[in-house]
Image 1 (cartoon, rainbow, N blue to C red):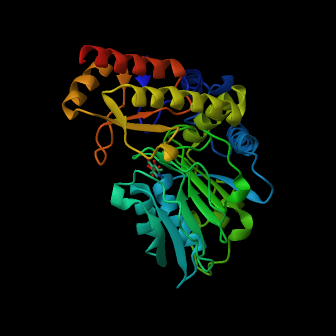
Image 2 (image 1 turned 135 degrees about the vertical axis):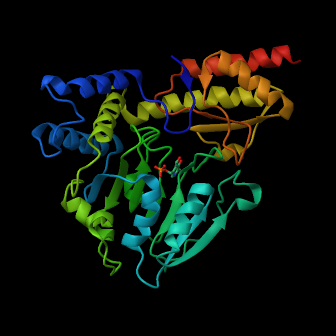
Image 3 (image 1 turned 90 degrees about the vertical axis):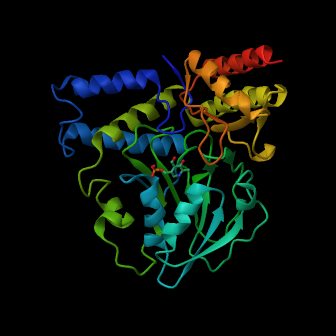
Length: 355
Ligand code: PLP
C-alpha cells in the first residue's frame, strides 16, 4: 500500500475499504449490492439511521440540531447557507482565510451583502486573523475551520453575537468541537468521513425559517430535514461508506482518541520541518493545521528531487497546491503515524545526501 498524504479525496481506513467492497458485491448477505438496493428499503434506512446516530454520538450533537446527508459538496453549501439564512437586503459576515472562504463569499453575494470582518489575503493566507469584531446586525458569521490549501487551522472559535456557520470540510471528526457554538456546520465527506458524493450538514433547527425567502425544495434545509435527507434519491453508497468510516472511528475510541493521534502525528512532522535545515514551514506557528501540513524547501531546486525520493518510498499526494507551491502532507484521521515516520525518514535521508 502507498502512504497516501493526498488532500482530497483523502485516505480511508483499509478495513473500511474492504467492508465497502464487500457491500458492493453483496450487502450483509442479502444477495443485493449497496449500489442496487432501494433507498426506501429497510436495509438502507438502517444504514442512514446508523450514520446519523454515529454523527450525533461522535460529535455529541445536542438536542435541537438536525443532521443531514446531502449532495453537491461543500461548494453547494457555500450557496445554501446564505439562501436559507440571509434575508433579502440583509448582510452576512465572513472571515477571509483562503480560497474556500473566498468561494463561499462569492456565492453569498448572490443573496445579499458580504462584510469581510478580517482577512489574511495580504500574506497569502499564512495565518488566521484574530483581531476582529463580528457585527451584531449580520444574519450569520462564516468561518472556515481548516484551510486545506494553506495549512492553517482555527485553534479556537470566536464568541459570536450571531449564528456561526462553519465550513469544516477538512477537519470534521479530527478533533473535539462544541457543536452548540455553531448554528450551521457543513463538510464535504471526502476527507475524514467517507467518499466524495455526500455532504454532512448539522443545523440548529431554530435558525431556519427566518430569511423570508422562497427556497426550492432541494436547496431548502427545512425540506431536507422533513424528508430525513431523502427528499430525493440520496447518495446511498457515499452514505454507506461514511457510516462504515464513522463506525471505524468509534471503534478507535472516538473523536478524543483520534485527536490525540492527530496531535502526535502533527507534532513529529512539524518537529522535523523545524529541525531539518533543508525544510521550513509556511504558516504562523500558532495557526498550524493538524490536518494539512504545508512546507517548502530552503532551496527550491531541491523540491523536485525530494519529491522523486518520496515517490520511490511509496509516498503520494504531497505536492503542494498550485497557489502555495512546495509540499502539503495531509495527515487525515486514517493516515497511520507509521506513514508520517516514512515521510520523516525520507526528509532525513534527503538532508543527509544534500549536506
Ligand atoms: N471547503 C474546504 C475547506 C475544502 O477543503 C474543500 C475542498 O477541498 C471545499 C470546501 C470544497 O469541497 P467540495 O469539493 O466538496 O465542494
